[in-house]
Length: 281
Image 1 (cartoon, rainbow, N blue to C red):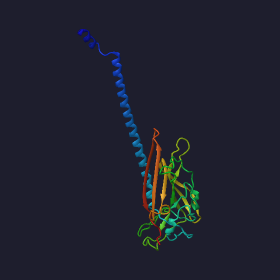
Image 2 (cartoon, rainbow, N blue to C red):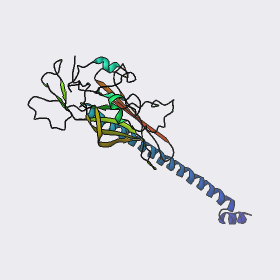
Image 3 (tube, rainbow, N blue to C red):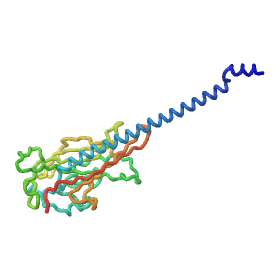
């Protein structure tokens, strides 16, 4: 009897035993593969989310740097500035017709400026946000005129500069700004993607020629994409948010896209910038 048992032991595993062992190895392999696959997917999602955040931050930095060279003002018929009026910037865009060159100008509604700025209207971007999302229907665009501060002893301002401070020594009640007949108008606009497969929203920086004397806005001079996958962009001043101090603009950019697995990736960046005020009462 002992000899027969020894022979069976020396004969190896049975088919059933081999199948059990093989099944265990297969299950272990599937488990390892699933874990590695999930780790790879999560790593890819994390990378995509970081890239989205960085893209928004880069656009925000560009806008902040631009607005540091802007100021609140409105032009008189003789192309000088009217005195700074705080009431103008505590009036909501809905009731402010902007019949004059009051800048920065906050679009009354997305892609639909009014008054003298109506010619810069553009197609409305596509949106994924739903009413429960923070960024739902938040887009408010902005346009402004770059300013150049003249400092005593500086060389002559190049003719490409749009606005020149005429009294650099006194930046108080007696200071003023002279608008040259032709200057540039810079706007930040949220556009839908191009036709075909590329339908991703783009936040654009658009520069146009403009003539305040004639009350006209000319052709686009430059148009640059600041960021893609932008769900909404919002500019606020004391006009739209009473908690903001005068001379301040708050910029908020929401970004959103779907990853390869259909995951919903989101990012948000925001900052404030104090504008250089042209005339103080």
